[in-house]
Image (cartoon, rainbow, N blue to C red; front, side, top):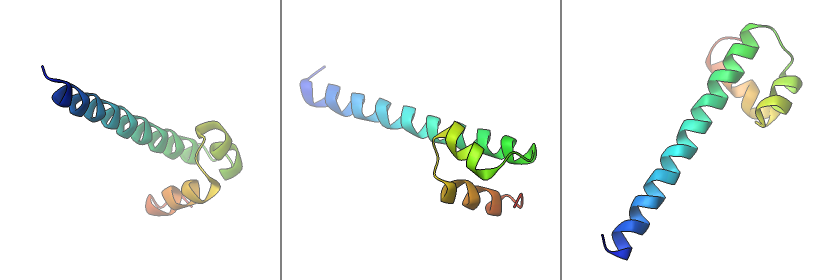
Amino acid sequence: MCNLSEGVERRGIKKGIETGRSAEKVETAIGMLKENLSVDMIARVTKLTVEQVVEIGEKNALI
């Protein structure tokens, strides 16, 4: 494989991993909201901002 295609492939893999991690954080936050944990606690544990947690909660009718 040439260097250009290797670089493109590596960037694609990295982006896919980051997308998966983001989705996992959202699912974790949803589960924690369902368990009635505080927004501050969820933000600390998931490394999301309080604003992001609130947005997730509102979009999923949990807040």
